Length: 495
Image (cartoon, rainbow, N blue to C red; front, top):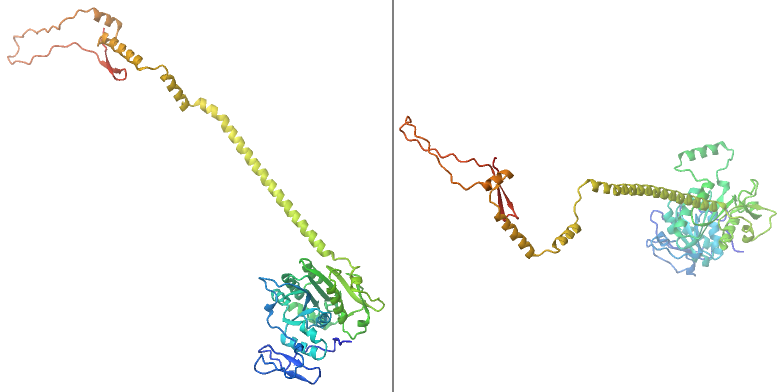
């Protein structure tokens, strides 16, 4: 049987290896033969100095890529490989076992680690102790990834089509915890990277349950008091998942070490909330095997929340038999229905507002029409009260009527007769009828000028003769007739 990782077979030490330089990281290649005491390591000043003198097989080299930009390119996403899985926290207690089993099942693994140097040493030791084969080492790619930034995690995911993350203590290295808030960063990164399926292992034994220890209570109080943000509850974390488009499988369990008696029991997969408080814990290697089986058939475990525990009397079942009886999680369906309801309410509200605006516009239009009708009704009254102005058509009709039957010969004859009649009449017209008749009967007489008698007593100085007294003539009125061709003079005299 191939050797497997156990809880005591290897634990990554937090103390840096003496051959690793963390102050000046470089691309370092380490290789060893199958013997435990035969090792060839390059540690010269040249970071690209390889010594292949004692190396029997080049495939035993385990590369560690320091360039995370080789992952997701946001301008142009890389094609997804269905056989590649990204393991977040690959140096964790459960993460390292999941990565090992994925490699054994033929998957390519992108191992997200916070320290590339330590991951490189881990891979070297895994090859040295035959924990992974040379063929498996070629499918292992360590990438720098922390739980602080979703975009950097998305770049580290690269072409992986599946992602797995374990929430619990000792899952971000041997001593650092992965919280639900950290796992949300991984979920958001998977959404950015276009991942098809995400598996989440939630270790309830490290969820902060009561230990009835006063010191633990004080420590938890101050940790919560001085922490920058409180971790999300499992319900809040699930809500974050259902708000994405990702296919997911959430596995709730209580993990234990592989050497514990419970690790030899068969696992049971039940619906959420059906496991009892006294259920047996599950070994970390057992949960890693379950995750790998889920990735082999994601359709049967899609969008499901399950609880996993061990049972000494449980029969052995395949992943299809374990997950086929589990109903689909109703949170996403409820979330979708709530979104549709909210959308329908917004559409109804918008339709009501549009209808109200149409009614207001219709009222305004009716007012304008009534005002226009009133102004049209007032027009005949205004025309009757105001002098009518002849139109151009009426003037043209009158002009046509005047021109009808008009001739210059007739007009000249009328003009001639009018002139002759005027000559026959006297130039002087008397204002009254009696005066006019007497004037006609009076004989023509010459004016007689009488000289007054000479006064003997008058002064010898000759005086200028006074002009004779003339007959007073009344005021004369003159007017032009026939368009100014002739002038008529009228004299008014007293009887």
